[in-house]
Image (cartoon, rainbow, N blue to C red):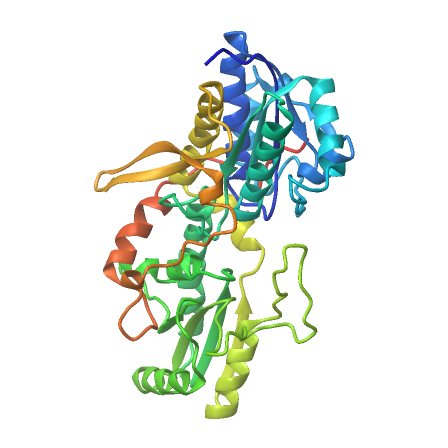
Length: 411
C-alpha cells in the first residue's frame, strides 16, 4: 500500500470520561511521530466533535507536540478537552448534504487521517464516514478510537475510561457503606450507578471485597429482570443480618416487561432514541420504604463517576495514551473503518495486546456483563468478576496540585 501523506484531525464525542484526554494525548503523540517521518503534516482538533466540525469549528493542535508538560497535564484532565457532541449522521448512501460539507473541509485542510474518540454511537459515525469516503473515492483513513465508562463495546476486553470510573465507584461505595454503618436504626440506602444497558460499572461496587472492604449487601444489574417481590425478600434477609443495608443498582435495571425502573414518564428520548431516565435509586428506595416502613435514602453517583480524575486508574490512563498512539500507527499502516481494541493476555501478570477491529462489528452493538460475573441469586458479583476488574483499577496517578487544587488543561 502506498504511503498516504496529509494532515490529521481528531475529535471527541459522547459522554466524557477521566481518560478520554489521555487518548487525545496519545493521538497527538502518534501524529507527532508520523510528522517526524513526513507522513502527517499538521494535526487539527474538532471543537465539539463532528457537530462542531460541520460548522467549521476546529483548532491546530500541533503546538503541543514538543510540550511534554502540557501533554501530561492533558492526560490528567477530566472530560473532553476539545468539547463533545451527540450527533447521529444520516445514511452515507442517501442524503449527501452533511457529508458534502464535511468532505469539502477535508479537502481544504488536506485531511487524510480522521480519528474519532468515542463510544458505541461514535463508532457508528466513523463507520459512516468511512463508507462515504469509499463511495466518493476520497483517500482518507478513518479510525474510531474507543472510550466509554460503560465498558459495553464489543470486540474489546474493556474500554478506556472504564477502569477509572470503576475505581471511583469501588472506593466511593466503600465510603458510603462506612458512613451508613454508624447508626443501629434500621435503614436502607440505595446507590444508583451509571449503566443504561449493562452492569459493568455497577459490578465495580463490589470490588472492595478484593481488599477485605465491606461491599453492598445487594447488587442489581440490567442483565437480570428486576422483580419487586424478589427485592423485598432480599432486603428482608439483609435486614435480619444488620440494620444498615446498602444496595447498588444500575440506572438501567428493568422490570419483566422491559420498562426501566427509573424511566422518565414523559417518554422523552435523545437523538439516538435512548429513553431518558429519572432515577432508579429513588424508585427502589420508595418501594422499600412503603414495604418495610424503615428509613430509606436514594443516592445517585451521577456525573462524577466519569470525571473524577483525581482518583483515576494508572492502568487506565497509561493504556488510553497507548491506544491513541496505536490508532495512528494502524491508520498509517493502511487501516480504515477500524478501531483499536484490547485483547487481554493474562490477569497475573496483567497484560494486554492492541489489535484492530472493524467498526461495523462494534457500532450499534452492546457487550453485556456475562452471567459468570453475576452470582446465582442475581444480586451480587462472583470471584471471576473480581479477577476481571482488579487489574483495570490498579495504580495511582500523579495529578499536578497547586495550593491543594488539582490543575487541569483547557484549550
